[in-house]
Image 1 (tube, rainbow, N blue to C red):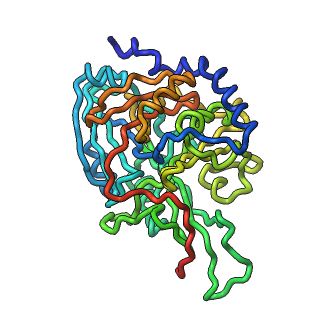
Image 2 (image 1 turned 45 degrees about the vertical axis):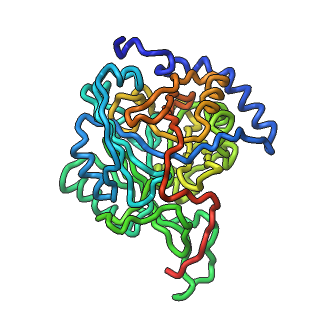
Image 3 (image 1 turned 180 degrees about the vertical axis):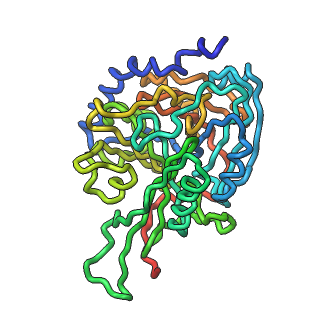
Length: 385
């Protein structure tokens, strides 16, 4: 079987076949704000997976952020074709940041014959773009580092200047040397093979949500959450996160825009610009959140989603894990997501893949053994810094 003769579940063409089913799902869920979610035991985002033609430079790059190799495996072209629909030999490397092993990991997929360049270096809010978020102790240092890579080394990075935002409404107009502002300073860095969002906290902390790796040269954490630039009606194309995966929607789709300091700067919104936003979180982990953004004016959106598929370069897949793999697989079948059969992946973990109508490809894994269980309760604590 060639890469052009993949099973139907590998192709984005099947998305339109699902929309009728998912529209009814979305309508049913919207009609019941007290809806019960299927008890899937699903995790937050376990891994972001990055395609590469040569993993060597990426291993050196991510080591600066504190990622080290946890394990690695290889597949020949026939096995990779069966698992991922990509007719290419594969070297797969799983990396972990510090001791955090329940979420926020990284998997490098080194393809001997990549299918394409991926979404690549692109303006903010290009459809198909993926962004992974980590906490840092010094966001100005990171901004300076990527500015130097852009202006002095001539590398294709675009760092957005950090901006302060009080995202939890913790601030006050009464300030003094002892009563200081509370919030985060955040920025985005857009690149050819990876898009970052960094944030630094002031005046508060959330235990277990962004654990700084003291050994990391750049003083950063695991990936805390992930952003997805998608197309379509968010109520429809993201309905399966509740109905199939059992994730909890933090909100129905809402309009966000340039008047919000953080998103306005991160996405470089012009005055008057806005987008749709929707977030999801696992009931089993406050970390590994998912955030989705869709343009309000599709006529002006930039679209590279055809490069958002396994086998291309850059961020192309994400993984979740569950103790109820067969149940989640049955839900995916029931709701028309056309998942692959359950089979061992390159790490001998039982798994299956599917691509949702939002264009996101997921590998669902059997629940692994973790040394540090994830936090399940969001706890915001004031600190004096």
